[in-house]
Length: 406
Image 1 (cartoon, rainbow, N blue to C red):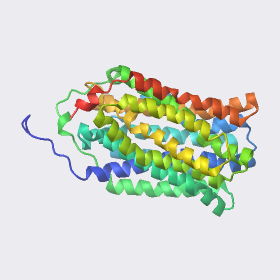
Image 2 (image 1 turned 180 degrees about the vertical axis):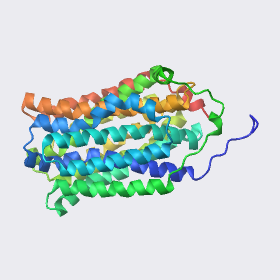
Image 3 (image 1 turned 60 degrees about the vertical axis):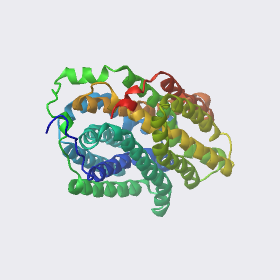
Image 4 (image 1 turned 180 degrees about the horizontal axis):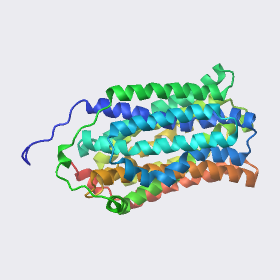
């Protein structure tokens, strides 16, 4: 192939990335439906608010501690093998949680599930690099948002239905999730594939510490991570505690509060693709992040101040619009100047680790704030303001390379 020859990308790329994204967002679906199961878990195991907060954050501890070393180690592996291994581990962890006789075992199961989730992330970066030209990366991330909205939103709607169908048994609900993951593992083994990207042939691959240094040496990567951490802190807190607040404060059922949360997730998922396209084509990514950050704070507060269902569904819809920021911010690692494949895997894992920092600290701080103020509503009000990080990121990130990298 001469330097002038165009690089060809198979149409099968959309099949590969779609199955991978489906497997990944299914993990997030399980993580984010904890709030639906938490009242039943707490009643059986007699959990305090602090223990509930610990349970909500446990799945993210491994992400925070192991994201960089795991991505450094697993970036050497085939994305197909890595994905199959991590989904299998996640399946085992779901059955472990369903069996857990005491709080500690349940906590360990959540922790290991989080490790499986973060260990899978380098595969996404490598598959995207292998199968897609740079100009399509934002559309891949937009597709990820759509899958997230549909699968996680669907999970928030179906989880209380499943829980009700099995007589409020959270253990059986987790077992159903386990069989669901076993099916995803089989689907990936059959249809998942990898390829060699001609653009990376001849590129000198960094080794050892140079991989981590090359990945983490970019200013914008840290700013993007900070933006994610603040926004996901509020998100994690609401997913873990919002159903409880609605049930205890306003006597709103888990099914309805799950539907309210699901609407926002679905809208954010589907709307993310359109907003990401609009932001990138107009060159106003930073301005979009600023506006969406303000909208997120306002709507988070709106969701806790009333029991009016029409108002809550409208505010949840607008909160979902605010979550359309995700594909804009998650594209940052793919356009860092001179980033190479293994460095990209580490940089992307760092970005996903930042989301775990937020979703871990959000429920944890909320649990402690609830105990300190003796009010879950006050706790969620305070945590709503962590989304200011999006406004800061929109004011400081540089997006020039995203518009010129074709």
